[in-house]
Image (tube, rainbow, N blue to C red; front, side):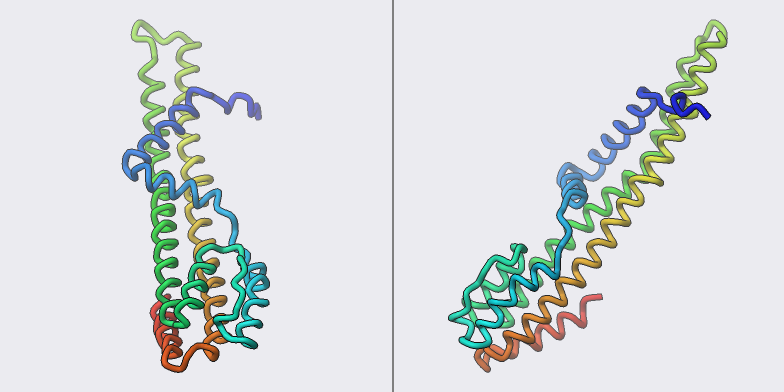
Length: 222
């Protein structure tokens, strides 16, 4: 098999540019930015975050929340929620901050997954469009062998590129983003539960009822 014959820059440009352009028009630049951000986003390291928080948690257990020295954990949303907890000494405020951050993350992830899935649906369409474009270039005065073979080759390759782009690149990327988000949210939830279990006892009794808010919140999250 001659793999060199399977590369046609014109066919590839029709499929790729058409798919990207149509996806951007239908999803919008904001959703496309969310998809790009999800692809380049750093993986959440739960062990590193938990290890960075451990000294602060131990200090809070010994000396109380007001004396706790909040250090960067490597995750801005967890640091923000902890800052709210230390300032207010309210688990309910911590839960509300964590909940808001989670909703924002999930919203961005849903937009990213939806955009990548849309691209996977559109790429075969532009493979077919490339096929029609190549066939339209056949000479009307007669079918010279070179022109005929070139048009058929481009027609086949555009269809192939559309199928490959949709089913081997964009669709798997969409599912990979979805799986990563599910795993990350589960890891974040474990850290939040650990923080509540450790810091709940050092919160004022009137504020400790926030742990009930968290338990109800966790039961609602699938």
